[in-house]
Length: 101
Image 1: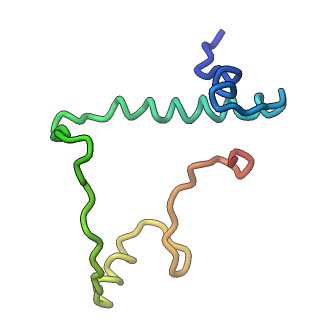
Image 2 (image 1 turned 60 degrees about the vertical axis):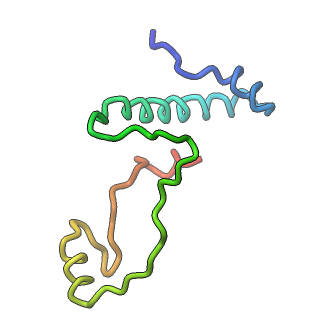
């Protein structure tokens, strides 16, 4: 028998929300899938990444507006593997729309 990663009753109590049995059956596998995907982050090699020395350290850069040339825009569009007209297509993260909360 597969070990359950998520205790829905415990989590719903922590969140102070009431869930029906049907909602629990729907949410449990979704949360387990999320936790499995997050668990994959442990496989990422971070040995070359500097540790953050301050918890409040600002790691964001300032937003700057950059105007690209038509040639740069075309090069980017041509380099993208999947397009639909002028839209760039990326792989879906859900197999079908019923998996979306």
